[in-house]
Amino acid sequence: MRIALTARSLVLATPAFAGGYAEPTPRPPVAIAPDATPTWDGWYVGISGSYGDGTSGVGALPMEGNFYGVFGGYRFDIGNVVLGVEWSYDHGFLELNGSSIRGLESIARSGAQIGYDAGAFLPYASFGMAMARLEDPTPPPGFDSTGLGYYYGLGVDYMVTDAIMIGAEFMQHQFDNDFPLVGQSVEVNTFSLNAAFRF
Image 1 (tube, rainbow, N blue to C red):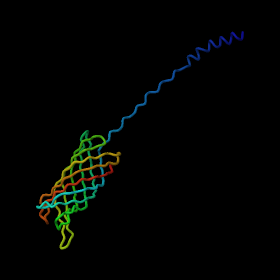
Image 2 (image 1 turned 90 degrees about the vertical axis):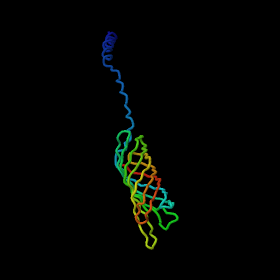
Image 3 (image 1 turned 60 degrees about the horizontal axis):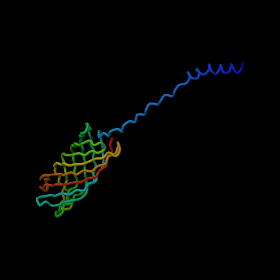
Image 4 (image 1 turned 45 degrees about the vertical axis):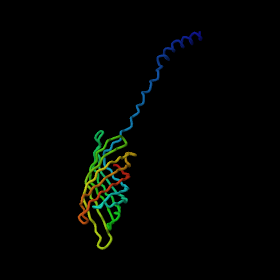
């Protein structure tokens, strides 16, 4: 009799267990967010080192030397096109060979940029106004002469992180008979390597 009751209890309990069983719900697939596309929008400031050469005067006297400088600007990233404005100042000496004039002491620039947004790379063209200073400190009497001109160039920047970029740039400068104390034109080419902080 006890055996019969036990068997009956098992039969009655089986549906209860079956009804209480729930299959595990599969987990939804985890979506992997794509990498954020770098943007060139924003301000930046940096430092640069340059090698320069060129000619000065009617006799096309050669000059060469090195500059170090600072620069800063702002860029607007509008799709595949990047527009920007930049200001820079280089100091150093491009020594003028075959002349008593020591050489070109500094170049200041104010200009614009237009580039192509290639992700972490930015190839661009630059152009604008430039001001250069010739110096001869040797007495007597020594002089400084400042001339105005223009520049244009090509460069490329690489975004190392969101906050740091490095780059290289070639620029050509032209100052046409615009140094009042010496009455001569000056042509200068510079090749620079630079690093900047973005914010």
